[in-house]
Image (cartoon, rainbow, N blue to C red):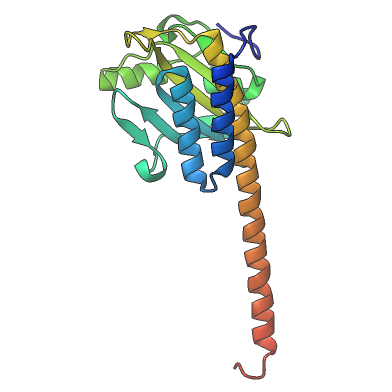
Length: 228
């Protein structure tokens, strides 16, 4: 089932306080890898998701690159200090040159709409060969899926958060992602996109400043009578 934007469910005061706390924590984190890892961890926590993947849009905007992958029941933590992810990125266009709407994460990045699926094994409209192959190889069972775009304050899509297998907090049974879970994930992804964009801008400015200082140092050194 494809869901456009936010639903009609309201976020209660407790969730609002939690989202505020998360927003403050994300804004305070200056290490890019730790920020990305926390974004995915917090998204999984507030939606009770067993697993998740955080994708980042490439600089060319031609593909979604794997940044972090987590799965609690499988003890999986890939990306950052968890090790390099060698999986192939997701192309934003198909072999025919048209937008890649067959891949759910690419579709979300293209349309900027969330997708909420009860069971990927019974969901027409998308190609889920990847999750099926993963399940066959590992014995896992991918079922419910929630995918939301990471859109910053300039309305640029800088990534996608894909969450897998929502669990009932009381029974541990895999259930569909609720409308409230979708709202929370959407809100967190937006906050995360802004925090990440700000961090990347600061890093870019620091790199420019370092390059400028190095250029000046070289120029001074070349003109100095004390250097050969």
